[in-house]
Length: 96
Image (tube, rainbow, N blue to C red; front, side, top):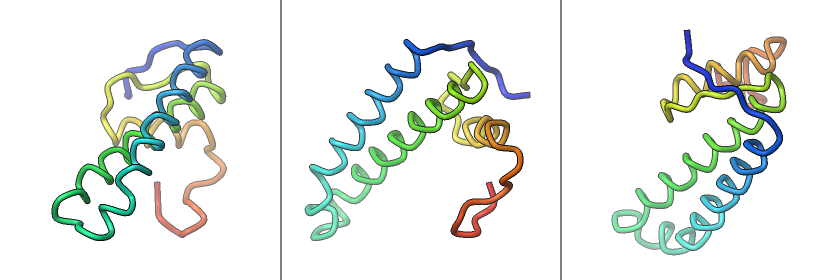
């Protein structure tokens, strides 16, 4: 079972701000990453992934009042599954 931490509005707001910070920082690398993927691509992707994880935390908190505090990607996916058990895959057909 995925370890969880109880959370409410304050935590959701904080995780949303963190998601936005990572996304904003990723945007700073967007042009450089497309021009020179070897130098900036990894930084861009890492920031985008962290933004996605923090965004997933917000969804989990709103849906269930808890989130996975470990930063483990698979645990975040498990929490998102619990947030919307009716929808087993994304609109792109990728299985969660």
